[in-house]
Image (tube, rainbow, N blue to C red; front, top):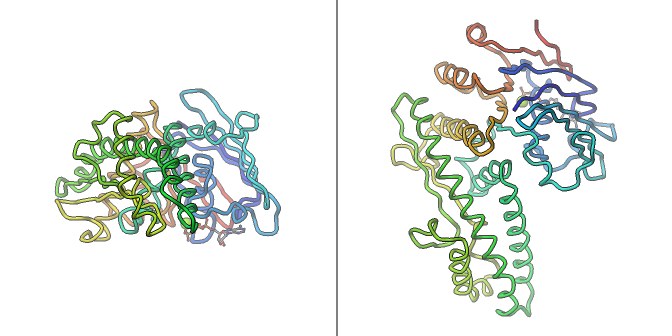
Length: 370
Ligand code: ATP
Ligand code: MG
């Protein structure tokens, strides 16, 4: 997949900018607070329809303006596509694909496939299980509309079930109605997450080993938010659903007592290990960063396997945090993938070794370097 060009208007600190990208490396160089991350954010927004920095669209619109606009031209294995996005202060965003309005998000997902790696992503290994669930969700959603549907349905039912549990006069029969549906969606989410993680691990292991020159062995363990039999992932989906429904029934009294839903993928977690030690508790800062880097590079391969083409890669400010060897590994690895890198300074030595397009960003103005 290639992003050919973009036009942005009144997005964050930009007035109006237009540019075309190269097929390989695209490097955006600029001092702090000039608009580097804002540009990546606008591009990534076209892939996920949600900013990676805020849930509020109005923050994306330039101060004192009423609306922002992004137009992205892409080429993929399905041909050329245009994506337009209009963000308005007090309205939902409007999206057009090839000039036609799109109303359902599932019709849009996958139009632009992108993997982002930013310093914030350290959260995946450092912070709460929520970060790890969001990591799985945002990656799987890009290639699986079925996952998107199951997840959204599951989350909606858990929310409704929890609201019901807060009521004083709720009884077990009322919960039973929800639990049938809940088990159905839970089983699909669990199976798809398990499949994703086991494929991801197989892809991430050799990458991580190469980056660490064979010194570190990466491993991960999926920890579902419901106790399951040892070989649950071999179950047919209906059998897993029935098993979950049985467990929900066993927990109903506890759920009623504590007024919340105890079991299910909304409590999932992942444990990352290096040489058998849990990274979250024992890993150094650099080790954590390398784990996330390996995971993100593995996602690139995973998307390629699932969809037949590489997504684009966006690296926000990460090269400065990697040592020289790791930077070099990264740039070499990325050769066949269109990549967008932001940085405050791009090493002249690295520049000689890498062909690409270079842009300077200063106070919301972008200039191509010749
Ligand atoms: P750094 O190297 O520090 O990461 P950056 O170049 O990535 O810097 P950005 O995060 O892109 O910087 O932000 C650039 C500027 O955009 C900041 O000064 C910020 O205040 C400004 N900004 C953010 N949102 C808006 C907005 N809605 N309207 C106007 N300006 C905004
Ligand atoms: Mg930035």
